[in-house]
Length: 67
Image (cartoon, rainbow, N blue to C red):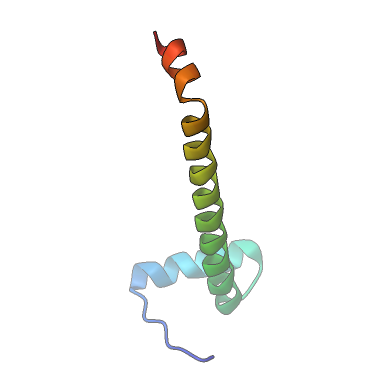
């Protein structure tokens, strides 16, 4: 799917620096950034769910430890 990405001058410089640092083109740097952000979101949501579950299961123990 083709799309147009409009960037400010600062955003374009940041993309160019990222691409150069990774030794890839701007297109690949953009794709990597998108995939990386999505992976972090999924990971963070999973960690959050595990944390909520653990707090729920261990609520009485956590209350006792807090005293």
